[in-house]
Length: 612
Image 1: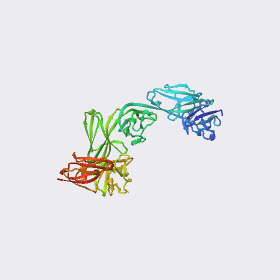
Image 2: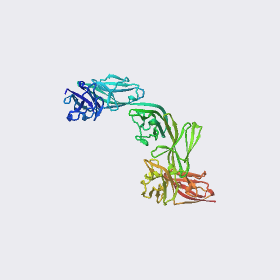
Image 3: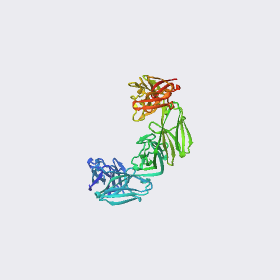
Image 4: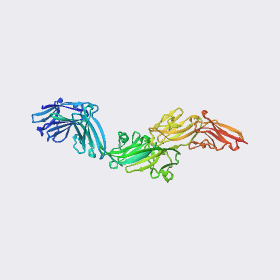
């Protein structure tokens, strides 16, 4: 034993020990732990080459006669007494006793991530104890931290009175891809028989290359699809982040070639095309700002397009309704210079392009605000066509394509009107897309797209039946139809019914109207010139009508009650609190005779006879 040295490092940090044997340069060297009886002697096995041995790396430098021992990540179990020695002959050894203390400090290792634009300058700041020498090194591919000797690196030293620590700054100028990687800074201590370096601050330096700038705009409440193109990096991981947040939250799909949700956006990393698709499902004013849409070229190098997102005023919302087998026209406006984009939301609220023989796009020019009007015609409408559509403008830029979805269209399908008498049974037939055969289904009455929805029954799944009081729901997966049967109809049963399929939320795109005819008819006989007042019941404030027709069904078109009478002699007076409105007819004429339907969803038959 030629001497004793005390060495210290921090848990989780790196520690390099250089044991010096200058008079025995070419002799085999080793390190071992005395608490293990030095039974395991770690040595490189070869000279002048780094070798891994368990959790340490070793280098036997025959030019300087030094054994370099590098603990890549110190652990509490590494503490203890070691021998750092040399085999002088077959039977004689010389060693330095090394007492290693592993400290615990919450601030170490200090981990820092720096991003430096290609060709620019980066400043890296570290603190070390005043009495120690500064050590700054970069990890190689084997995670060995090697000293840096580069004309590009300047060390700036300054004194800090706080805790007698010295602050130093490393400036790397004109950074290139070679400068990317992991650096460490720490304190170097020289002893009689060895030198040790405690590495306390880990710096990951990422080199980022901005390939271009694109300006993107969308509408509050609308959708926005951004396609960032990296065709030469198809299989590399891609991301988007917001610069105003320091790019601290990098959103990426996590998996490739599959849509994934990440907060308020959905992402798809298309490895075939080398494109990252970012879909803002519902833009908000807070989404405005500057983003990076990039790709990780390596562990420490990135390429990105700077994306300046502007969020404009609100998008437009439209509801369209049509019957099964019918035709619907959807009209949108986009700026004249842009390409038309029309898409339909899938179950994950991603708006996918439509390619269907059923859809015809008709383009035409409009002089107003230099906008182009186009119409989409969907013919022979089926259950699969129900849902939410968007139309908007597609813009192609050098490094990306973005699609601003400005008009949202909800397409509802109207099923056949049901007209029944009080006390009878009503059968509501709900067809659905076969892909939803195993999903829960239910009937809903009233405003089913809002928070005050009124689900009538427990949901039904697959080939099952549920029954609640007077309502029975059956699901026939073979026919892709579920049926709701209401027995013993009352006035309260009348109204608008929606067929709902439940995914993450209810899909309510199919509806029908149930009209309940009260059994008590009103028979009135009057003479020409008389006046008459007729009281009508109603269930819904928005549904009041007085209609002249042979059948109640003739008083409803597309679910809207028709006020078929246009005559100044007819007037309404409303007593909303009682659920009654009154129809007043003055100066009766013989041609006023006939059958009237009084009400809307709840209707009463009125037989009026006017005699001369």
